[in-house]
Image (cartoon, rainbow over all chains, first blue to last red; front, side, top):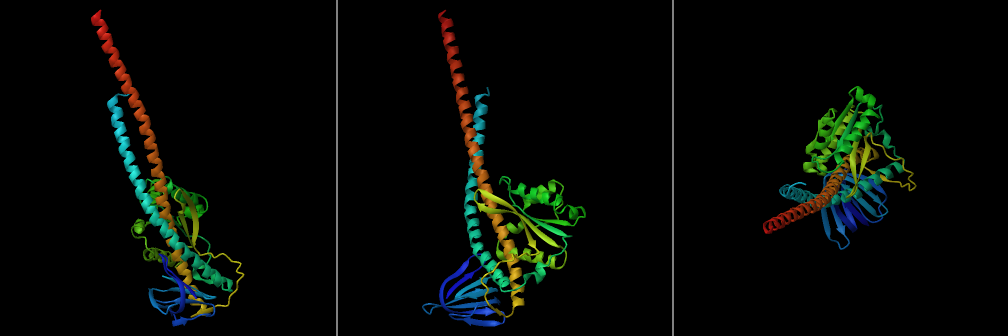
Length: 78
Length: 291
């Protein structure tokens, strides 16, 4: 899966990932490969990324929107 | 012919002006690079946001029901004139105020007569020009440039959005200079509120899962898009300002160089003439003594 986390001021993350957990408005949820197309709003919280080599990376966001489509994930962080 | 001392002091003064304009050019060039980076960073964000909004409307969602998209008869209008806090940047600020005045006398002439047009100026110079021409600016927010971050700009956007929802304004427009490249600024007039989304011919219809539901996503993404819009406009204008100043100062430096060259030529001519006269006088004196 290809993930992009973009904020208005810069691109925070870009790269291939294995899994990630997003802080959705209705509770946090995980995304794995071949997830169905989805648009979700996000609340303030942590994004947890599991990279290809199982390394875990965290990002703090204040809210935003995420779009999942055909193994391409875009997170617009605020 | 002007006397030698006068020319000498003029050369010195033009020289020091040239030094100043040259330094200002360098400063603008450095600031421009930073501002340009900011422009290139905001573009992918704005584009992706636009894409998501398009995907939303492509999957059969009507954005026009959103309170921010409500089209009303434009009785009360706000024009946001975005200029700069500092001058010496060519026609940058004059263009903005010219466009605002043009709008006041054409598109919004009727509303303006009823005093239903409010002008909000971001940038001291644009506000000053408008004020000197007798157009009262309703509000000024010149300090926005001191801290040009997304968070700060969002506050302004939120205020405008609230005023639109409350019915204080029926329409909010931007007038600003868009950054094309260092030498070219494009004067733009854009509608901010109500938001208009291009009815995209979305050929890729995807069945999305909406989390938690469509309404709350639209409720979140539309204001967010608006905030990004204002931020982008300001960033663009700031970069354009630096570009305009750099070009103006570059021209000023060139003109000063040209001027110094001409003055030096006049100076040397005058000096030569003085020497010739002196020699003539001496030889004439010698001739007379021989006499």
